[in-house]
Image (cartoon, rainbow, N blue to C red; front, side, top):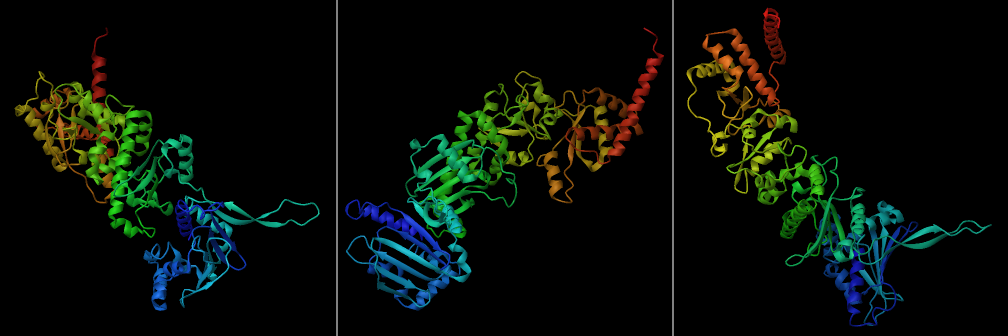
Length: 612
């Protein structure tokens, strides 16, 4: 009804451009009042008004063909069917959802007609009769149903107007009671007063050149109730096949429920400055759910519903434009204000990475926005473009390793060959990283390769002029050791082989092609009861002193000590990846026994050694 009043004021203003006598000197405004005794609500405007013919056309089209069609239309409205709203005058017939009688008193601004009173109870058609009204405009009075008397509360009306009509372009005045200034010796008196309850002009409808940073900051606080300033914003209008305006913000801090399944997200939707809904998630992809703001469309109907949004070509077009503008905003922040983007990434990086998998069509826009720790930037962030720019000549892939923490990932034995060649390695510690990076696969024609995977081609990674690791079959002694490892470990491993990637560690576990890293397996075990995890390939460093000693021990024949050493080597390789031994107590006992033997031998040697 307030939107109807706003439309009437718009029509008067436009017609007054050619007929100056229509406007007069009075301010264009909408007045809302309530009577708590009579249980009525009144909405009045001093707009264009209506003639008798216009009353019949605008408010009686359905009833004009018979009271039955009119009653059926009202029944549809009562059942919650939204198509009435905006069809017979914005929301007019929804008045009968809360009122058992509606009166419309109107006088046209032109034509010289007097006033007319339209009355209906929503059941038996309507009546129109002459009625006195001194000035142009329309007054609608709702006689509330018994179960709707709460609507005659000024507080309730103020709340509804602020929520749904805050940005209607004309002042909305609400009649309220307040105490008059006290007079000595007299009882306090209550008097009526009018208070403007809407903000009026919507910020997004104003020119950007007229708005300051403080204007945007104040609007953001009003919109989100967040007192921390946003990290980025964008304000734009799209004109063409669709017409809409939007102001979008990236908050300074992630909400506590950002990863909750029932977290409400999405921007606030307006249609022609009339509030439609909060959290309109249909307007942005899920991985941008942290973005806050408003979208004001001139093309969507005021009766838009969730179902209509899901199937609307207009909504899909708006979503495409909004997504592009958010990417532009993030790109600009990353390039021009890297410190702010680092804060943004700290808060929302994991959510952005979701988009690589859930919205692969956007991965070319997402890839430049990704940030990672690396062996050269353990405390800072590196982009894939920065990584590529400082790659040494001959490097043919972007390498990464996954770990529980930056420190654990940086200490991974899988990096030894890459570190030796001076190759930077990305350190991935976010639980979502393996899932997301698998969807990206490459950046700027460079494959993303796991340093922990069996597919790592160390020979391919070797720099020009550097000796390439050999693919020859291990010598018989090492082959014997490999067979002893396979016999002891059995089906706990996918296989055992000599390593081309290790330079200082004795052994490591690598992921077979298509397998999950330990970080992902921990997540799967936590969320999927019964998930046993995949097998690993155990790689041995044939140049390591421990492996050489085990090689000699294996060549000497069967030995119970060798089996125990093999178990310890396997468990240690798992610990380096964050995989706990299947039997921790047994592992501790084995290590204690081996340490005791080593310490005993050292002590005996020290005792037998002659004094210096």
